[in-house]
Image (cartoon, rainbow, N blue to C red; front, side):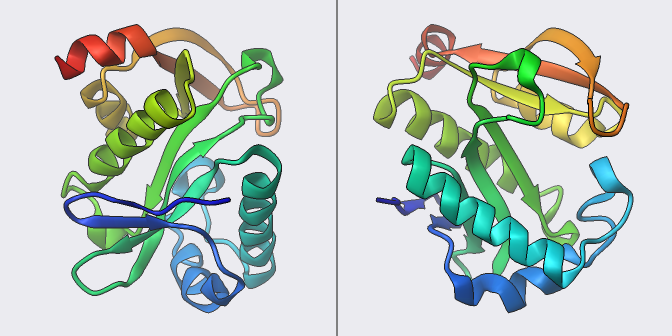
Length: 180
């Protein structure tokens, strides 16, 4: 069963097949997927993404949420938790991630959604640690991770693209200490 989480400005909700049209428009923007692809995604790639999210929730009981602006209920991207199977060397692990429309960057929404995801992972799922993985050139994502209290644990190479990636993490104990 999927869960909806609300923050001050975001509604993080389960994916629906009807999200495809709105999401395809968002995913087509090259800046949205600049890291790691340097291009927008096709409608077919977006459709596969939505199905993977629905399947992840069904299999694991958690996943990425569709992220809506609470102001206008507009789909602006995604935020949540996933198992980073694309980087086997960090497994077992759960990754927190976010990706928002460029016109919503710089407002603290990724940090807000990331905090809600960490809270869900530690309090609802009982996770001991959560990682986040990014291309170091994506400075903005690195700043979000720092604001979330995540620290670097390793650097490695994305086996799919060959790009360098940095792995950061936060433990439940460190997260609890930061909440106090």
